Length: 322
Image 1 (cartoon, helix red, strand yellow):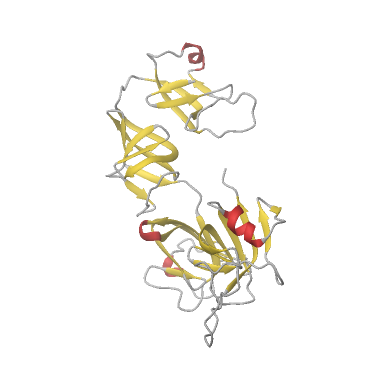
Image 2: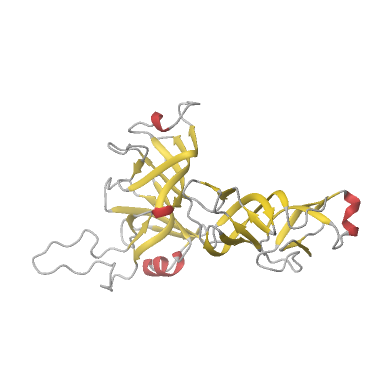
């Protein structure tokens, strides 16, 4: 275990040292360049790292003395201690990103976001010039319907509004159009979109692909509101209508909202097939929604039979966070 600046760095026999003979001579007066990742824990009997924000080094290189200053460093890890963009930590490194470029533009940071930050080290603080989101992205796959193309926005499944910026990557897997961009989109195209939530809960695409029109209609992201217990009339579950009133189309239904899209999860025919980490879930729909989903991402495969709301999930899979 080494302490490099304010970071705890661990290494093992897979770590590359430059120069190779440098490894046995590590000491407090040596200055280092370290490449690595925030450590992940496993069932190893003797893992090289022991702390939650340790950096596992894939490479350690001897460098000249730069003290608390350096022209440029880069670190990838999870945000913690977030106060605002001028004060937070990535791992154990303090960061000021008040003047940084964010990728995607408008990225709204919060604790536990995974990011890559680069910039000069000044007085022990990383003065970030760039902050790039590296965490799990939301995804939408659907056909572009009539009226879905707005002014620099794309609306999928009737309500999921997606923007883009100069960092969005475009790919046409059907026509091979190398100049494929927003102006190339047409009604009837099937697209797969990866996106990140930014300020004001706006979705900004990091990647838009035109794909086979026979693709599955899918939505993936964190669940917002939900109704898990159909015996409850506590909002947001729909209460029974007053006498003489028409019932809500969602009355008596279990549902989740992902990226603002409400999707029914059904336990009777046609029932939703439930999975947790690719294994069939054998409990109730209420347990699946109220317990298993939690803060994890859920992937919903939309049944194309009802073409408009209320949407029905043919399959719902929870991916447990590492």
